[in-house]
Length: 79
Image (cartoon, rainbow, N blue to C red):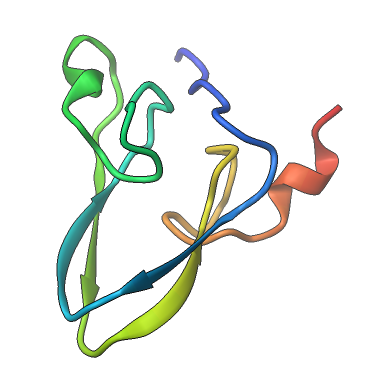
């Protein structure tokens, strides 16, 4: 399986209002960390994130997290 692109080697801290969001898992979106449909020719699918109330979240920027869409510190292992 192909590896996702790594748009940045640290998390995205984003303030989100209640609602549904789609996290980019392929790394190709120009609207990081959110999906813009760029995955359509890849084997990747966006990950749905539902927020119940306004909050700040840290979303993975390197696309290596084991806790998608949230940052788990995997970027610290990248060279």
